[in-house]
Length: 231
Length: 239
Image 1 (cartoon, rainbow over the protein chains, first blue to last red):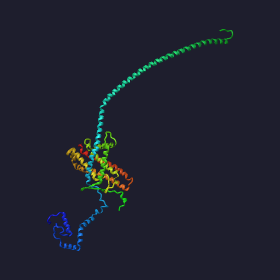
Image 2: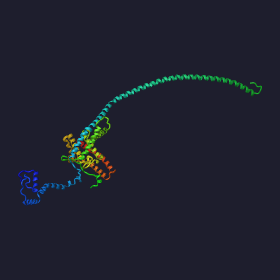
Image 3: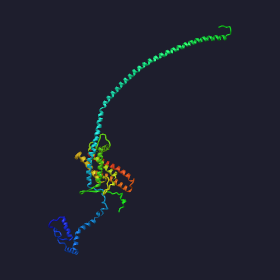
Image 4: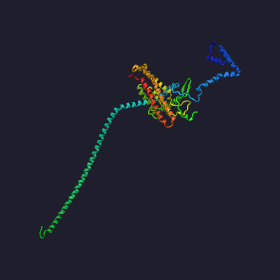
């Protein structure tokens, strides 16, 4: 139908210019099969009533006014300032892979900064404690021999001590015995001496008493017996 | 004109702060809060682990405690032989989800105003939770195949061949359940707290906020434990 293939844009321009009645306005537009002659005449007639300048201005503004009308008809745009889009909960978009990528990055960073270093410290501490425990377990036989040795030393020491105590005691005992005997001897001597003295005195006393008894009995007899009787 | 007093407390669901990257859109609020979480975790690592001593002191005690906890979790779920190389993955899962949930519950994000939507826990967005669940799926497949080669696929017909459809279905339900469990818990807690705060801003929301702090911590543990369990299942020998 057309002599040369037109781009979409050019076809649109040609069509729109043809619609507003500008024939042959653009040289590249192919000539249309002539429209209904009556319609063309009507259009031409209408056009001839208006002055030329106004006609041109109107034609120039036509696409613009069409666009504005289109805009006003679109409800969302009109209320854009006062009304939000209805909320959407299940709104999948680029956020999903973005979150996956961020999570993997976070995982790598936390592994480097947290889980690996702290894990290493934990494992080292564990190994240290295990090795120390194992080392100490091997010492248990040593500990037994040490215990036996200690017991022996203690026994010997105890024996020594008892011996020492014993000798000290014996020395002291003999000392004390000597003192005791000495003291006993002294006291018994004194006691005997005093007993002897007392006995002597008692003998003297008895002798005096005897003499007195003789006197008293003689007097008693003289008083009791009548005169002239002799003892 | 809306009464300005009514605008102080508002609950909006599903509003996002859209960023454009070429032909694609991003949820800006999720990325911002994720960067905050990453900053907190890296700061904790640097402060605690920069000067490690055989007898720990200060923050090293805390980081050692967490590492031991995660190692124990991984060992219980995966088994004695293979668990060490999975500790970073499970640990990062646990820490990321834990810190995200608690940052959303405890940090006063609402005072920062962004053009659309609001800052909250990054795990309240379906993209985050599905990303984590998909990573878990990929990792248990990787674990199984790297250990057993193509023999890994025998588990689809064990213990009996008629269970094949169920086993295949399980591979789809595992990531779905993981992601929706976490997403639902966190988003629902945020919504309940938001609604309560818009109704009675004092005292009444506090028990729900405490419950939210507790359950969000539990969800972090559950996610990490289940990830470990799936990996353990994939690498275990036949009984």
